[in-house]
Length: 102
Image 1 (spheres, rainbow, N blue to C red):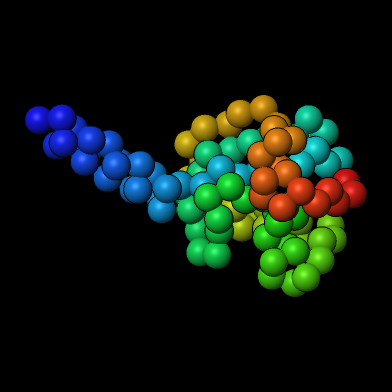
Image 2 (cartoon, rainbow, N blue to C red; image 1 turned 120 degrees about the horizontal axis):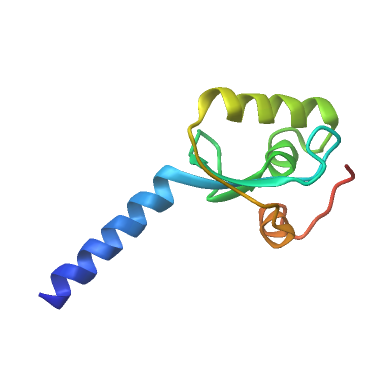
């Protein structure tokens, strides 16, 4: 009985880990307070991710055009399950501790 319950918990965690993403939107001009979103995961996303981290991975750097394109893709193609306040700690996890200018 306990083993079955534990197995269900492990399966649920695995499904969530592969199907959702915690996406951090750094404070920028149009969103000065920033935001943390729980969204459906898109291709090439990590469990904890941000537009800056995706730009750095995909094109080797961060700029406003890339940020805008990533954010537009997220809004258009993913489902937003939950909106939370900005988390600098999660942003740091997404960028491996690197900080990029606003």
